[in-house]
Length: 306
Image 1 (cartoon, one colour):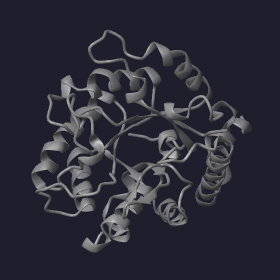
Image 2 (cartoon, one colour):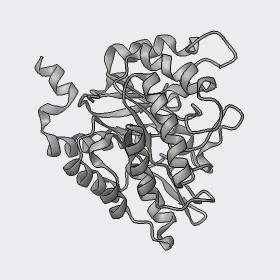
Image 3 (cartoon, one colour):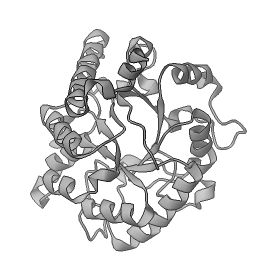
Image 4 (cartoon, one colour):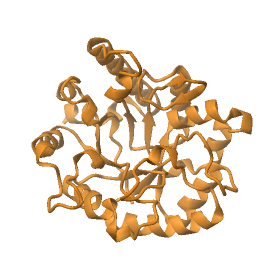
């Protein structure tokens, strides 16, 4: 499956709508969270009426990629009954996305607290999930990429390193990887005593299967590092991006931010300062991309030239 090269963009998170000037930016791509725009499973619609016009406007201005958090992709419900098949697949087709990414978490229709439920890194789960992932990619009809997770505890029963698990999963399923560099950074902070190694991770996964890269920021709370998407991208994560872009050929680099996380604790959201921070990260992301692939490789530049 061929993946278009787009450039540097933002996740179109509803938490940012109303205060971040998306439509004033020269973005190479927008990543839409399917969970945030899909209609409930117990109703007849596909997309929430309140966001239909907004998503239509986004689609007229930017290339859209799709991202799934709560699709039940890697849960235990029958795949045909999941939000992934019933809502996310038709959304992907309607929006004509070039790829879809999902999270390496367990979830189902009754339990969506996916952030604390990383996959079990075992041979049995490689085989079970590879069948599920291959079938789901066929439903989508475009590449399906799995995002490596940030997690606080390894799932009981795990018997192999995360990177070996992901490499085996991609080999068995024929799917792809959505590489979240801040999740790697967070895991290195939280699991360094158990020997977690970013270098080993990047040397083990098949970098030629990386479709997209996520960049974000986070913070320490109560002696744990959290992937809150609430700060600018850390310097060490920018270094990782340079390394990955020199060895892989992703279709896009997507920056992530969460308004609720930006209000962490007793803090209030400083809108002007936060917008400046996001724009600075976008500029730095474009600089890294251009350094690796050339200025003319980004979608907005191609549009300007045309």
